[in-house]
Image 1: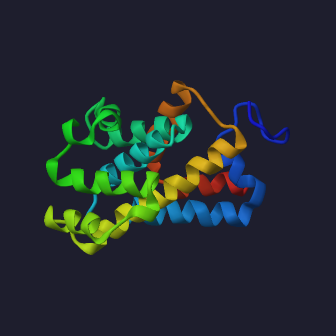
Image 2 (image 1 turned 180 degrees about the horizontal axis):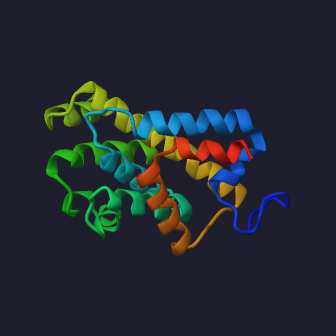
Length: 181
């Protein structure tokens, strides 16, 4: 159940995007550009960041959907939950951990970001494009978490599994069809 009477009870993000179709179209295209275009970070790593940021924000809908997508891209089951408990002990490539610490701080304490945070990412072997892509992914999901929570979406594990698999198989541009109905 959402907070908006004009949205269906089984509402998803695609329904919210129909409330302002031009903005919805731009947002879908932005998702595709951020999460699927070529990057030093794989689509699975970007979905992992999306799930992690959403978990930090306690956004059940985005956390559930993007955890499924990350796992479909090969992230081992349970990895995201472990990251939420302790990034340093999580079963994630050590090279990715500075990026995860960076996006955690950007999500929780953005005004406290310092050059040393970026330097830790560079020292792990990532370049500026990788850090930019991680920042953009974190920013997108901080935005999406607020969009989803502000509309009252919660979903359930079945929905997360369906939507996560759909995003993995078809990307984000497939969602444009919902704006054309």
